[in-house]
Image (tube, rainbow, N blue to C red):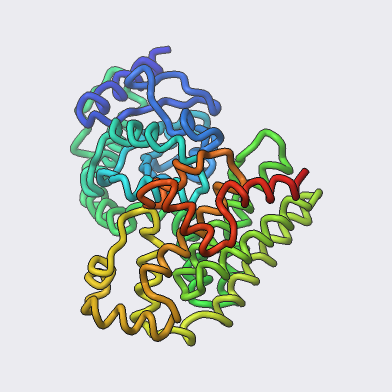
Length: 406
């Protein structure tokens, strides 16, 4: 009890100094937090993550030398995680490194295929998070390390008479090394490396990195084991699709492959089959990058397409696309029409329509909400453009797809 009281006092000190929310975990259960109630994004996005998932990505098994671990998830939230004993951990966060604007929230919804209707809740949630740049976040981790160093953690009364022993030359050397690798916790780093290998079309290294990732514990995304692995693989496919498009593959081709792979995943009924299929899926994405990327369009057009895809739910104009790749708008417009075979505005609208099909097919989201989300001025205009590219209205498309699945 005395030790726990000392830990709580240190956590209160940390929270009061930094304003970062902090949670004390024992045996995967929260036993104390400052403030008393901490909001996590899983209150909005069901099964986004749990405490056990955060601990799983940070578990090292070594507690003799306390070090803070920095972790950033797919929702741009940052956490500082500290293992103080084998069954006690501290999770500081969530916080942000920079303020999240509407465009980023739109992309979080789009790339994670979340319901559009949660947008306002996400806006409110992110506005309530503390924003600390990476330097301040880093020193918050150093403060936690100091408060719970081997000398101070065994001193529940908080006697810091030996402080000078802890803050040594070695400490500052290690601090500099840690700072250089900020937010490069292996799972996050490996994920980025995997996407880079897919993007570059490197088959051998893609398989190597994927094997390394799969040697780690997979995050639990559902209470049902089979459903959990399926959900995890579908998340992987979303990332593979993004990497392929950034590697030069046309979005329509990448999403067609995505639909095919997801259907195959849903049809599978065994865990070994699913695990093996992830390698097959990654291989297919590497091949499509090798076959369809870079040779079809010039570097300028590839950059323009990449910018369009990344900002599909934001306002896109010829001027801001040209500015982003440092070319004259007239030159970009002429070159785009010549290489792609359609005008840049038509390409943007067609790409938006193709992405909007997901929400029409798989959700009950109102057509008007989908139209606004993809930057169409109203439902009537969206319906007209949708019919132009797909051959039927959004409602007709939804009805036809629903009938096929009855």
